[in-house]
Structure formats: C-alpha cells, structure tokens
Image (cartoon, rainbow, N blue to C red; front, top):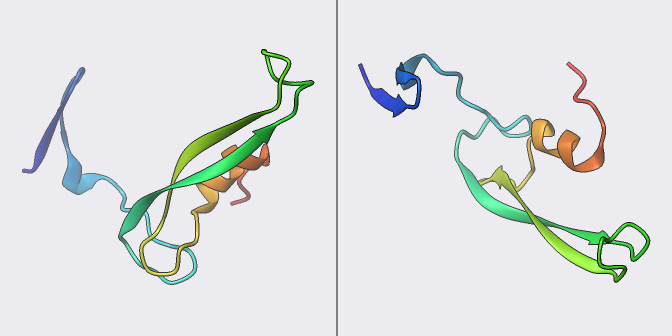
Length: 79
C-alpha cells in the first residue's frame, strides 16, 4: 500500500483516479498560471488589478483540464 498521511488518517493513493489530458491522454501536468484582469469597479482597492491564478496544464500539449477551466470562467463542467 502506498499511503499518504492526511488529517483524517492514511489514504491509499493507488486507489485514487489519475487525471488524464482530454486532448492527448497524457498523465503529466505542469504548474501554469492564468492571468485575470480585475476591473476597477470590481476591485476592492478601486483600481484595476492583474491577478495570477495557478492551474495545471498538460505537459505535452499545454491544454488546461476542463475541471480547472470551469472554475476560471464561471461555467459548470458538462459531463
């Protein structure tokens, strides 16, 4: 058993689903950033802001999994 310790005990990581790129079936992802531009109207400071949002992108083709895109665009993931 490959165990990972969590606050609630140990989980068997081998039983967890592996995320696979929807476009090329790659299983390796890299950390990437989506840059969001916040208008002065929405910004708490009253000034325009640039905010980096960390996501994961495919290490092969660069696509961002839909489960992350849905969070970034306020769209629900269609299954």
